[in-house]
Image (cartoon, rainbow over all chains, first blue to last red):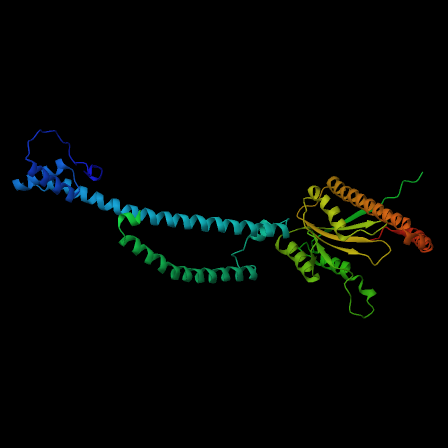
Length: 171
Length: 208
């Protein structure tokens, strides 16, 4: 029995004692397993289908169960991708902080009286060197963005692999 | 009764980084930097001036003369330091490494709130001395200035005494060694030279 994978019913349910042949029970059980819903949802869905009820709500238990299963499979893959992104981000942040701290330390050692002021690069154009520094930074940012875009192609291919993989592979 | 002679003296002077019209100016500091590095124009006698020694910073690193000028210019014109202090750290017996003058300057930092300076040690006069240039945004009140000067002077005196004692011990060890005995005559000559040097040191307070 795959009870753990079966979805709960959407509406409130009531117990009803019924008698089934072994053949009928096995057929219904097989259908329930195939659609990954529980025995009661299966028997209700099959009964409503047989009654040709105009309402479509009887299909809800089966649809809901199938949808939840799909989401569960996708979620595992997406969660793995997100955790990788979070890890990369944390590593990049820690390294950037380390570099920044060393830079501040170097400036503080060289100019202990006013390193805070010297760390500022003005935007107002009064100091040509500062304008050059900002222009150079913009050039670096462009270059880094291009490099990052090129590097993204590889992770995208990996994402496709992950999405194509089965649940066991992705988890 | 005369007071015991000091082993070291620290003297200073304040320069307002202002022109006659009241604008920000580093002209006086520029002149001072040149004077410390090259001496008086009149001394060059139409020759290319030679730098008297190397500039050092508060970390004891050598700094090119042009970088010292640029540093001073930035301090005044970009970062708004309105006050310059020039210090003269002078020792009675000399023989201090440049780092000792730096240590003496460092001793005063907590009082002056100035942790950055450029200095040059002059060995080409009768008395070893160092010139230091420091900048401050505020003028130090008289009491704090005096405390600053006295703290550096006490540190320099202590360092001078330590170095002097070290040299005396080295001299004694040399005298005890067999080679030292053979050189007794030479040492006697050295003593007479030291005596002559001390006579010269009577006027050791080098003027700014």
